[in-house]
Image (cartoon, rainbow, N blue to C red; front, side):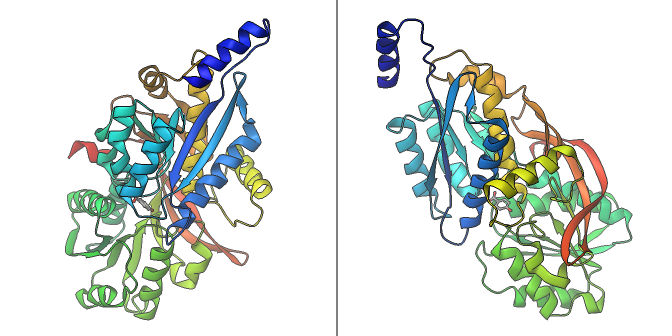
Amino acid sequence: MKRAAAAVLLAMLLPGVALAQPVRIGVIAPFSGAFADYGQQFDVGIKAFQKIHGDTVAGRKVEVVLRDTGGPSPEIAKRLAQELAVRGNVDILAGFGLTPEALAVADVATQAKKPMVIFNAATSIITTRSPYIVRTSMTLPQVSAPLGTWAARNGIKRVVTLVADYGPGSDAEAAFRKTFTAGGGAVVESLRTPLQNPDFGPFVQRVKDAKPDAVFIFVPSGEQSIAVMKAYRERGLAQVGIKAIGTGDVTDDHVLDALGEAALGMITTGHYSAAHDSPENKAFLQAVAEVAPRSGRPNFMAVGAYDGMAAIYELIRRSPPGPIDADAAMAILKTFKATSPRGPIAIDPDTRDIVQDIYVRRVEKRGSDLWNVEFDRIERVKDPGKER
Ligand code: PHB
């Protein structure tokens, strides 16, 4: 209100001068603690977007404020969202790396009437928790279902599933199981691991003892993927012929090189690979190298933030000057389409989730580095999680 009053006053004092109000985006994510990478990847994606597209759209300055949950911490995420929405004057809430934090903020978005743009958190149900949520990342069912189909068609008959024991893990497990068993495969055991699991050794040993053809893995990207692949290597699963397959989270570009040779040949399904061959991805990687030269290779979370910013810029471009009206904003966001660094994307107006191509990738060595090399693509995949 105060900003609006000041703008009116200035307009009276300075007739003829265009006074477009800035748009403020409050980005909530872990920027410290075990999941600090998530916030940092968002920051890299936002900066890369603004490097290419500028920090002004339709004459309005776009201001980004970052808030650290240090999470996973739903309570802190909720408090930060309340502060930003009420006193912090933000027009849009954004970020959200972890499902529990996104779920905790959904009610704040509804009550404060703020669009909430999710850059990562990927449990299917999240977008149903507020009409003001839109998601520019993925859902776990969206990436896991195609892998079940692929595995059944490619000689894998018996699988043990190993997933983190929270929303995204149960989504991944259910979606994989559905398509894999429909294709004639059998899930012989389903293991769940704590969200922050220090040692995967005992779980991976149980996989080994079950003697499946493959282990299907979802763990949140970063430290957890490094830890699970370490146990896979140490327990010698590859040597006894048990393949590792999983969602792109496990071979996340930002940590892929740290997984080492154990990841070589691993098949994953995902929505973004830094190896994706397109002019948009080249421009994105170039911008990241310029804005964050020491941050290493960006991953799917940086792209989720980049595309989230693209959606927000489109919203600003098509909005009248003045405060952002949440209902009008959602009507615009529901029609968002773009060619992302990952490929073509669009928001599904029915679910406010993203429709995108899902790629089947193999970890290969190119020079001295590991890459997720895309070799197959399922076009325009919607979130199948809403169909269960
Ligand atoms: C989530 O908590 O929703 C989440 C976190 C990390 C991932 C995927 C999903 O890699």
